[in-house]
Image 1 (cartoon, rainbow, N blue to C red):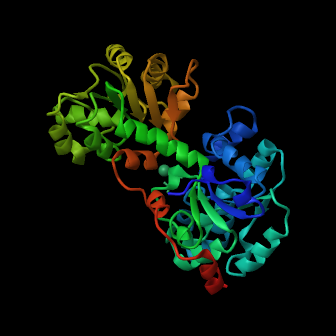
Image 2: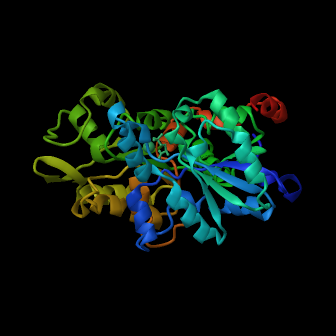
Image 3: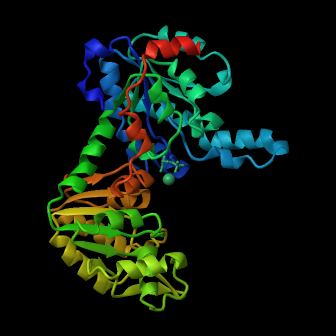
Length: 405
Ligand code: 3PG
Ligand code: MG
């Protein structure tokens, strides 16, 4: 793989970079930030150094991203027009132009898709007329159906906009989409600064974790996380389970779980995994209206003790129904125990990281991954298409450009 960090002003000056980021950020988080209630969203914060790196060395930057899953908003053709405007306002990337501009103290030009099928070359010429260091943000690529189809023709046209491509979006690298995978066939492609760091941290816990290695798994569904458990069954010392994941194991032990969230179809697999003495389940829980909604005080004590002994921790998924404050105790306690411990910790998944960011104290040994699904797949030992694509050799970018125009 080739790394952006290895490039200098000599390579970058006057070049145009197509920078893939992941601004798939909920409107609530965005509004919170805009109203000064929350910090800069992690996925924005992490790519700022990359943008600065590029513009400081005289490159122009065209930022590419998706946001949400807008195609699901189209119900019927007759409603197409109103559905289109609805999905635009809910999923547009426009607010990010303002946010980036404020953070970078530079104008960020927003580019809408009225050029859709028209000439990408024209747009490229426009971009090239801007001085080095200019920044552009392209509208949500998922407004175009070609993006999720990993459409080659589309990727080739998109590639016309720049001289090279940088993937700095670990969290979408598990998707084989045009701006993540196909585009790498048409431009020299590099690993961005944030992606480089993310891979380094994840490889550290995967390849050479200091022991004891403790894996904490919570959240709603075990089916999302089973790959991680299987991949680490030999390497890890303990698995501390909570949330719906733990409930499925409790049900596998024929314990009453009542109205609790669990996955019936995963019970045989849970039963199989229970043969491993490394799987630790809650010993008490907080129950409301017949449903387990958090781990109980004895479990908190037990888990905290185990976390104290850890040298490496991987955590994904909350211990309870953290949407309600009164069921957040278990998850908060885990977050605090991790910060207190001596362990190097890698934490992922939107909900887990939002709790973590609120915990006070020394967090230098905690790495928060931007990835949810991508982190789980990577830790499960799967190859992510977006990362694999950066390893391919491609044909000359120039030839590809000429044949596309
Ligand atoms: C994420 O938030 O997990 C990524 O941006 C991928 O989004 P997706 O699950 O809609 O593909
Ligand atoms: Mg997701």
